[in-house]
Image (tube, rainbow, N blue to C red; front, side):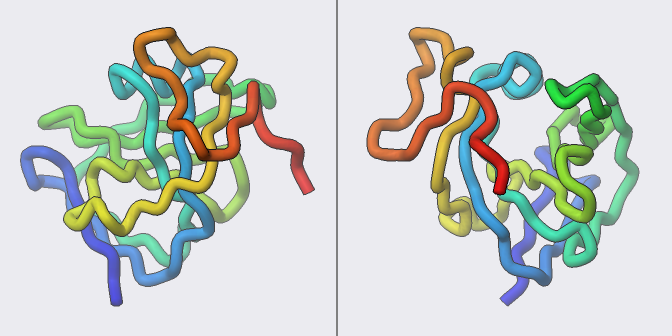
Length: 134
């Protein structure tokens, strides 16, 4: 079953034909500024995601020193994906899913940066920064 979604105005749509690798919440400053609170995202194989419609990109430098590219709708501003953290994987914004129940959060990252008014969800594994790799 394909996962579908799109932006607020409907000019950007996507279809995901590969299973999500994991899902979670990010409390880093960039995600907070982009979303207004924290980011709920699913890591998905880039090759399995087809995006249609015009998008724009905005790049920042991640903690790794590598660029993080945020892809959004130029009409309504909805964030669609972020890329650059891992080759071949993009972070699909869960709030854009047609069926939001397809998002299954498994952990929270950068919780050391969460503001008091937006605490991490109890019961989920939480990492002060990025989780250990490997």
